[in-house]
Length: 70
Image (cartoon, rainbow, N blue to C red; front, side):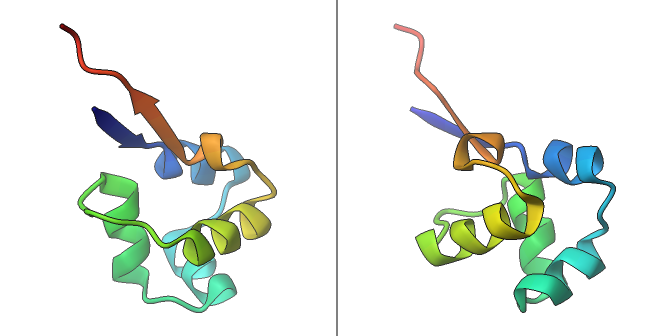
């Protein structure tokens, strides 16, 4: 199972910077960067909710599930 983050694409579509998004949802910019690069092991639902609210999007705009190939 692979979870792929699409936050970078969603942010680009909305023309918002890491710094501005981090300030809006009150988390450290480094954490936004880690989510953007997929360099995370977990994503809190409360953080996902804040991202969706700030970006006016759905969770599937930020995270995508790609099944393993057999």
